[in-house]
Length: 74
Image (cartoon, rainbow, N blue to C red; front, side, top):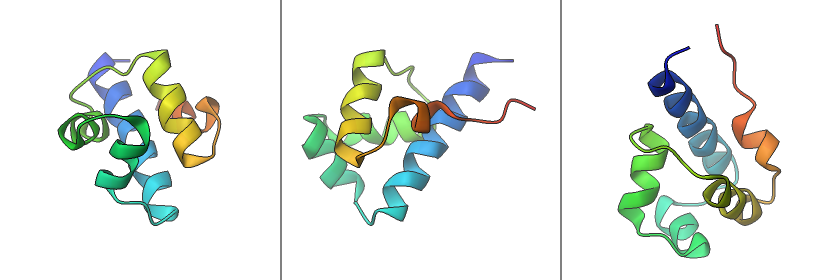
């Protein structure tokens, strides 16, 4: 599986969970101490998140890291 596809699917998961919780990109970025542009790149799959980054996002969303990376790899 191409790493770009994996990054895009993880980004889509993050965005989906964030939107389900009615949290804006700006709000989640602030909670994680990120720039909004960094959050945008993560959700678009243009950057490879570290485990620490995934941990911060999962904590801010109130989910586990597993929830963020639970993606389908067709």
